[in-house]
Image (tube, rainbow, N blue to C red; front, side, top):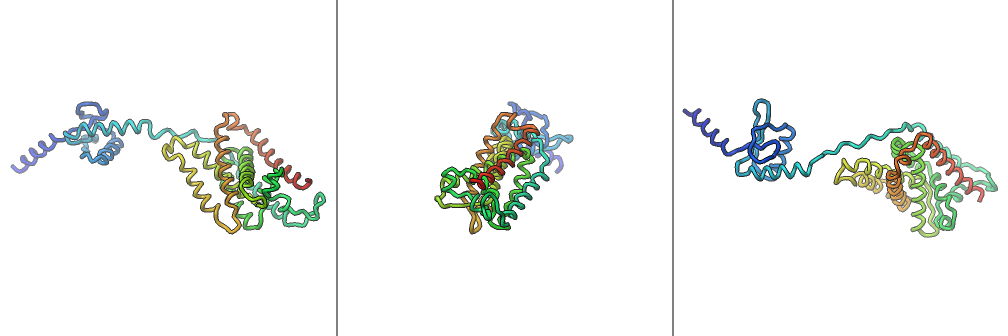
Length: 318
């Protein structure tokens, strides 16, 4: 007798609940819903405070709502499906990565060797000895009066072994990744350009007697380049969170680019901004220029090296 009463009560309760049709069309349906969609729909309804429950029948699932909430539930789910249509988007086409670790490390080693050269007493072109820092530092007044080569030569100078090691360690991480994405030639030319442009922008706002040296302007240029390239590459997948790579790069700039007694915050900031600008320009170039062939990349690498040598040649003979 008790069992019959319980069964009758369950039947009455079920009359108050109706299944949600998988197609969300008008009228109830007894068709089943995929389990993943069921979970998502239940979360949507629960967030809108609409009662719901799931039921498994023959290894298939149905979603039930109270009869008086059926229309509201369907409207909410239709709106959810419209807003999330084609989401998540397909992942972007993977970039072809370039193996460049060895070549990048060699460049960083050459930078360290050059620091040791600047510490020696060397006589060249009438300089007895050569005062490398005096000839190559980013002196604002001299840059603005035409000594443009200082924009690049300053990037190769360092004030101490600690200054050198910190730039090589931090720069190596980002430059290796950038070179893998773009190829060594294109990446190093962009890093060099970001460093030079950052020094120029810094000179434009500093006092005439301001001087600075170090590769950190180019290092933060690499950070800006990498953040911009990743932001553009994953912008569809990040959707409303597309600024996240830039936000992370800004956090890194604030953490590493503003501390230290002799830190040139302006050079770091303008190097970072120059990297962002050049990253935007580089990514929106036509396809052939944006993805140069291996021979062109090697040519760009050679041009970058010759540009550094040429600027020091001018600094020594002028």
